Length: 87
Image (tube, rainbow, N blue to C red; front, top):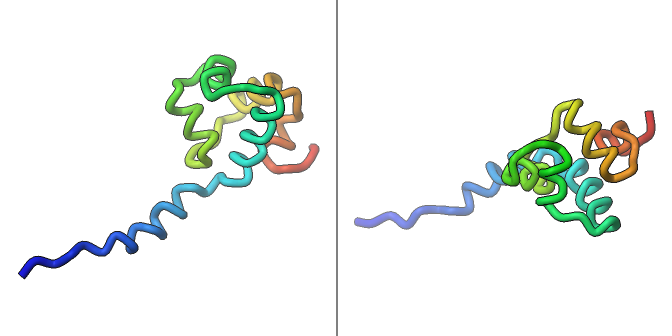
């Protein structure tokens, strides 16, 4: 007897890996306003294209030094980009 795999059980895992979705939303919104691509983000932050893509998807969040570089690129405060409010 062949058992059909239940792919719906993977949904909670996908949702849990997107834990930085608010950060990603602010990041991609500002990138869109300024016409910047993931490649631009990658070059500015000094990270690989894949890591920059993960920032935009909300599966990763940059550390302080990279966050400051990204905020400078976007012309926003690092605190706003990270937390959604000014410091």
